[in-house]
Length: 196
Image 1 (cartoon, rainbow, N blue to C red):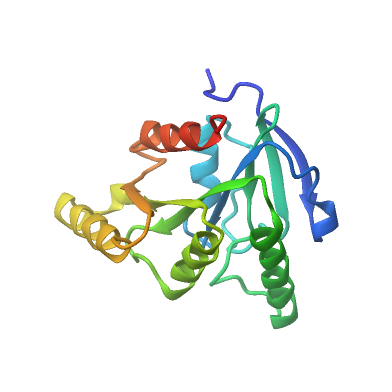
Image 2 (image 1 turned 180 degrees about the vertical axis):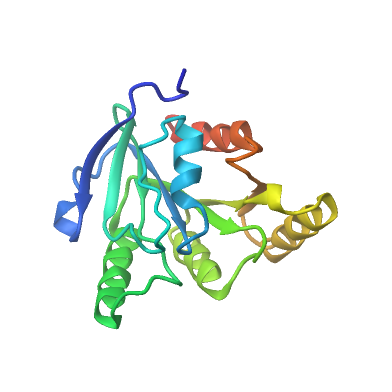
């Protein structure tokens, strides 16, 4: 049974006026294209087709809103980095993300999805800076940890935590395939979504 049995798609936004009501609490998921963001969302919600998984990086081109329970939402942001899209489209995504991060009052936290084999990159750090500037929470999911040996996994987790040591950012190892870290991620989400 799903942890969020009534999760449902609400809307897709290509512009800020399409975001929907800015009430309640919501958690955004962001990550480089091909980081495993859609797979992580589906694993955490236990809904295999909730977020669209594609072999083509950059398929999430809109901001997608999902209702977990009334007044509590999960928001799937466009992937960044490897997407083979024109510069004008990429600039449009950046502007849309800027509006989302700078204006959305219901945003309580960012789940940053990072391929554990690559570690935090400059674009990931910029995402963290964006959300921390709004005084919001952030948690890093180091995905695909099943593809690392134990020593490398512990090293990348240690390095990520060290890179975020002066901030409120937390981090964990995560593997949708091996079902590693699902409960830890859900606990973070549940804590953020609880009424203030």
